[in-house]
Every structure is written in structure tokens, then in C-alpha cells.
Amino acid sequence: MKRLYGLRGEVKHYAWGGRRRSAGAPSPFIADLLGVEAPVGRPFAELWLGAHPQAPSLVSLPDGREKPLDRLIAADAQFWLGPALTGQGIAALPFLLKILDSEKPLSIQAHPDRETAIRLHRQDPEHYPDANHKPEIAIALDSGLRAFCGFRPVAEVLADWHRLPPLGRFFKDDAPTFAKAGPARAFARLLQAGSEAVGKLLSELSEILLANDRPEARDRCFLELLQEYPGDRGCLSPYFLNLLSLEAGESVFLGANRLHAYLQGTIIECMANSDNVVRAGLTGKFVDCENLLAMLDYRTGTPPVSAGEQRGAGLRVYRGDASEFQVELIEGGAQETVLNSDNAVSIMLVLSGCAEFAGDGWRQVGGRGSAWLWPGALPELRMRSRDQSLCLIRARPRMRPPSVGNRPG
Image (cartoon, rainbow, N blue to C red; front, top):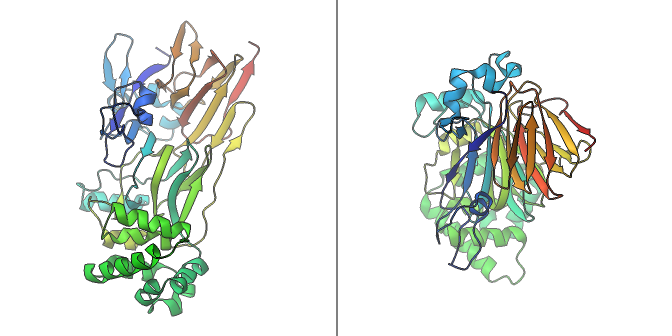
């Protein structure tokens, strides 16, 4: 039947996720959004909505059963994905939508391009579970999201080497050519140096900074990381990578091979349908320095931060360079809105308020935390908010332009 289908995603309880600290403390964001109990101390790190084989969402069918989305698509891609995708030979959901809530830093990491992903999956499927690339976009849901993203401008790195003698001594052989050669050689030195040499650098640097009563923001970040991950060379990332602070509604796009890490905050994250991660530090998981150094994008400069593009009242669109996805933030009043599928699948998640969805012969109500699968075979639906607080996310393949219209209420 051509209608919306309820969708139940999987929660990931990674150690860095938000958690309830005591019996009287607030629930972490994801548990509160879904209206589920959060035991004290249990982290709620990610909510996955999609068809990745590692955690396919469950689709609620009219007969009361739930079936994994990847199996439904395999059985009838034309209906679920829509002709706009199947007409291009696409047979799997191209994107994965997540809510990510980090209380502690994630690993320093990059995601491979498609060619590298194919090679890594073939060579090491245990650590690289699929053969897809993983560009992604992160949209801050609260103010003060902190993240690393890409290599800093050369002049800034050199200024820190001059300002902080332990760094200057460690990278003295790289300084003369750094301006022309970029960060590749110096970053390789950091990742490949022996543990004793790195430990000495961390100790000397922390001693200087702890004695400084006016440390800079990246110095404070280094000390915070060192407290959380003592002895980890990834703690030196603030001196190589851009340290960003995003306000609510701001976003950053991360292309293939871009080194990054989310440090703290809550985001909407949408990406190509992959879970490939190549790590450099700040983690107890598998670190793959050899492949990481070979694949990284070593371009320097401050990455662009975007607040999205306003497309009429109540619609803001976030897009990167990837064709697999775009994210729309829809805020509604009482006026009825007509949304078009453009013959391609969408996933929607209600962040606040309550929405009424309707089509020919059907009507459904979606409260806060409800997720919905919009099959590509359903051409359009009507949506109305029950109050002014409605805010929902819609993820779908990148379209040009997004289709939305209003009808009198």
C-alpha cells in the first residue's frame, strides 16, 4: 500500500555516548527523544535509521509485523526505493541517517573514498564491513558542538611549533619544508614515532601548559584529551586539525579521506550507506596508521560551515557534494504542506511537536521521536502540524530542487 510506514531504528551504546549520571539526572538526548528508560551510566551514543546490514531498521507493516528494511528493499526495490533510483540501477538505500550524542570524544578518523573502501573491504572485511565510501554531513542540534575537521592552515601550525618548544623540538626536521610540503610528513612522524618519544612529548607539553594560567583554546582541548586518553598520540590533534565550535543549525560536510572527530555535542548525521572508519587515535579500537596515512586528504585550511539554505517558509536544506543524500529540516504551523517524493525514498524523524500525515485513504499521526519510511512509490503526502513546535528531519537522495508546496489550511 502506498502510505507512510513506521520505522524503528537501532540504538548504539558506544562508550562515548551521552548518559544519565545519577537517578535524578536528565535522560541522555536519544533516550529522551525515543521515550525509553535510560539506566544510570548506560551510554546512548547513536540512533541508526536506514538499511545498513549491520543494523537495518525495522519497518512496521499493516498486518502488525516488523521486517528489516534491507530485506524489504531486496524483495521490491521499485516500490521502496522508487523509480528515480532503480532507474539508475540503484538497488540499495543509498544513505544512512543518524542521531549522534557524544559526551566524550570520538576517535580521530577518516572515511575512505570508494576505490579505497573496495580495497580495504577485500583485504580486511572484519574491520571494513562494506565496500562503500562514506561522505557525511553533521548538523548541530545544540549550541557548542565541538569537532575537529581537516588540517589547519600551515601558518597556524608553525606558530604553535614556535610558541610551544616541545612541539618545535619534536618536529624540527619538518619545519623547514612544512610550508611547501604540507602536513603529510609531520603527521606521519607523529603516528609512526615510538611510544617513548611520544610519551616524552606529551609529558613536556602538558607540564608547560599546566603552568600557564592563560592557555589557548586548543591547549585546553589538548589537556582535556590527555586526561581522557593518557599517553594517546591522538591528544596532539588540536595542533594539527581545525577545532570547530558549531551553533545549533550549523553544519559541516566531510568528504572522503577528511580527518575529523566529534568531541562533544548532539548532531544529525547523514552519510552514504557505509560504516567504514579508519582510525588514528583516541580509541581502544583498531588503529590503521598505514592505510590512513596513504589515503588522507592533506589539504589545509578552515572548512566551510553552513547554516543550510532556506527554501521558503519552514524548509531548510543541507547539502554537500555527495549524491547519496541531502537533509531537510522542516518546521511547520497549522497550514497544510504538500511534500513530493520525486519518485525516491525518504526517511523522516520527528524531533519535536506532532505531525499529521495524510494521503489517499490514509492518515497517520507522528509524535516526538517517531520515525517514518516514505517509499519512493508514494508520489506525495500532505502534512500538518498540530502546534507551532513541529520540527522534523527528512533525509533522502540529493534532489534539485527540493519539492515542497503549501495549500490553504
